[in-house]
Amino acid sequence: MEFVLQTIANGLLAGALYGLVALGLGLLMGVMKFLNIAHGTFIILGGYLSFWLFNLWGIDPFLSIPLVMIAMFLIGLVFYRLALSPLLKLPDVGMRIDTSMLITFGLIWVLDNAMTMLWTPNVRTILTSYTGETFRFFGARFSFTGLCGVGIAVLVGLALYSVLSRTYFGKHLRAATQDAEAASLCGVNVQRVYLISTGIAIALAGVAGAVIVSSYSISASGGIGWLLIAFVVMVLAGEGNINAIIPAGLVYGLLEAGSVLIFGVPYRQAIALLVFVLVLMFKPQGLFAKRE
Image (tube, rainbow, N blue to C red; front, side, top):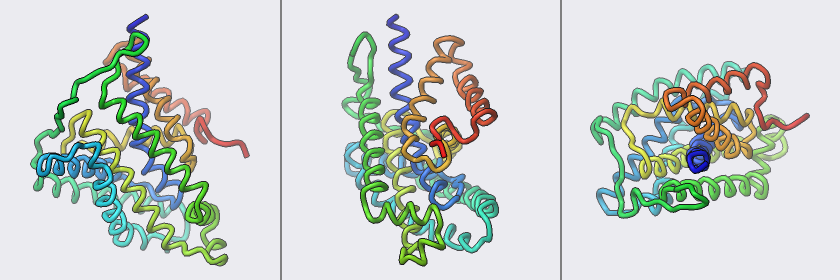
């Protein structure tokens, strides 16, 4: 029974992080229909920035998150201006998705090589005074860094929900998502909405990177693994259903943990990805898609 509780605890801790990892990808896809293949690479870049702040000035990785967010937000603005804004002239959504995939795939090579030159290809992690500390709750042990990651995922998810549902920017964003041309005719500055949305999406990737580097290790070429996780969670939540991404991440984390309990560690990802394929086959709109 204790092993079962520990498996569930591990699934919840990992699932919260998976949801956080997918938030930026889901936001960019849901708003502008851009598939950012470099999303995982931006996550690694955020992790390296947190690592740099810790090594140079001794700033705790969780306390460095606001600084990482600001830096990644500015990078996101440049990313939109140079790579994404020209794609808005494409006539249909399919071309926009395909072209954004090609452009951001090339961006992976640029960023990977830049990070390799700056931080070398060695694996990096952050070791603090509380690294490895755990707490026992109902027979299961929770790592301190994992619990901090859960708290950050919940706070970021709630903050994003509040921005999208209770602010004028959120109303403009929803209007631009539903019909950009009609929103523009009603006075919404669609280009500015898209610009800020991209900055937020890349900043969210930076938050995920700062959490990852404090609990796991990162390397310059390690973004593809986190991209795959983000893509699976986004599909489970349903395209454009940003509010369901954190719950979808928890579902994916529990699926991985359950596969370890039943089939063993070697099948951990295989079983979870099998469920992902089944969802695509039988409910392609996602597990949490809203009824029309």
